[in-house]
Image 1 (tube, rainbow, N blue to C red):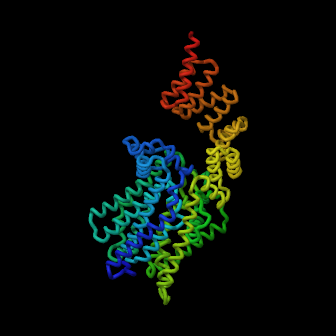
Image 2: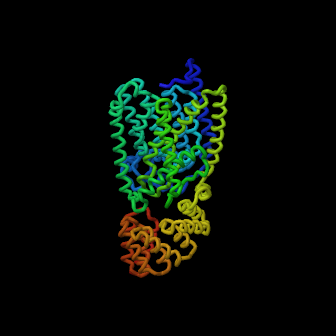
Image 3: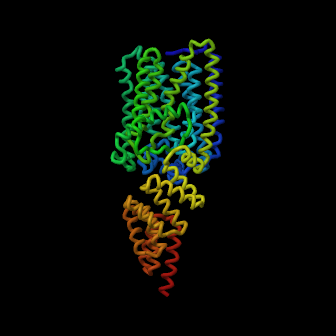
Length: 574
């Protein structure tokens, strides 16, 4: 075990540990305190909190049961759901408090990372530098400032606890410590399945800095990890099951494997680039339709060259191999070889844990690089302070972009090209604020980039309906149905426009399609009831209003319509 920079006086060790932790807390709060005043954003926050009735119930037997079930919203991560439920139970829907919980987890993660590295290596200042990079790097802002990314900071909390428990186990092996390590991994996987690579990381720790390979055979160490790999395998299976159930898996026809591999190679390099020079950070980086061959070959050559240099220094500088393989390995689940939902080319949140490997290389490599310098300590101190100050300022600026959906997506449009998703979501926010012309502008921008984006087509139809352009709105809803004839929402919106234009028979056909595809959707029954009442078919109208109320007892519109209808029927009887 590496004991460099270890202080002989335990009192000084404790004092420095406390000061370092205090610095991590204060510096992180300085960057992120602003998010206490930020809003929810209109990407995933609605699914996770704002429009999620199960989450808003808080911790009830019904909601807990839902959290552990296969939902139609996201892959299986029950602990994440429970975390959001607890926030709703304590804070309600105050966005700043939800942000504050994520911030607390990030601070704790930074401190745990410091203690884990310091305990394994005995290198106080290198460990502190890695923890500071982790706490203050702009790439990590997304994980902290986005409420829907609670799963990232929560799962990393259990990642760090797993490593800490593992270090204690290796120091003095016992069944209790082994099972505790296993338990933390299981809890982490229940917060986010990205922890499937953690058993692999534990093997890397055996190589360096724990150096267990000196005393045990590789076979025994692998055998020791079998239960951990088994948990990961179960998590992969459950996650695969849930995304297939959710029907969000991107087919190979849509995105060929050749393009996925090419993007993976380029993305690895871009993650390193954004770590070194964190500019043009965005919530969404559009997946490319093609990539220049020079980028693919250049990225492959770069990664191969670094790997070769790492192997050359396998014995002399083992931290290089450990850090490099940490980075490469922990990104595999999200590098895009298997895709689900609206998949970006890369994402800042996915680098939250993987970049720790590169941070380790920088911390220990920088110390080695300057070890022959006369004023090594002074140079390292000045360099470290300069880097940390620069990152603090950049992270503060990056966090400010997360103030609300408008600032966030305007920034994404500014720093990326052809960002269909950013234009569409900015349009949604502007529409909600009543700025219909601006919303229509951004919806059309989104469709100029990707003409077959059904969500942007529907959103444009809704905005045109609000503006009174019913004929043009109907054209867009019809276009959305050409793309997906089984989309009940498009049928409903088209039916609504046709009813407003007086084309009742066509409208009824679309509402009937809604009922066929989504039999439990009460508003469709209500709309048919309204049309039948206008046609004088009062008894049939009564049946549809009653069905709407049966499906959704709180449907005020259907209740009011039924009351008016009964008054009309009583009047006719007289």
